[in-house]
Length: 92
Image (cartoon, rainbow, N blue to C red; front, side):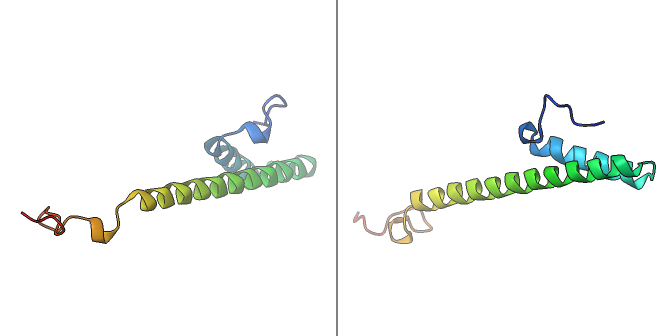
């Protein structure tokens, strides 16, 4: 299955791109690809690998940003209650 002209590689989700890469690999491993088709498949696969790497990088950046935000939102250890749930700075 070749990628349609109307749906370029940049529009694919990570899952779609990875599935297409698997499809290309399987097709090549079958050994039924002529040399003209092979060069086109390799070029398509290279574009898909680039797309997947970019999506992985973007996800890593997003996860790092979210975790850093969560760490800033968590109170410092000095402000946290003791193990028994009481704040040691409060006098009873």
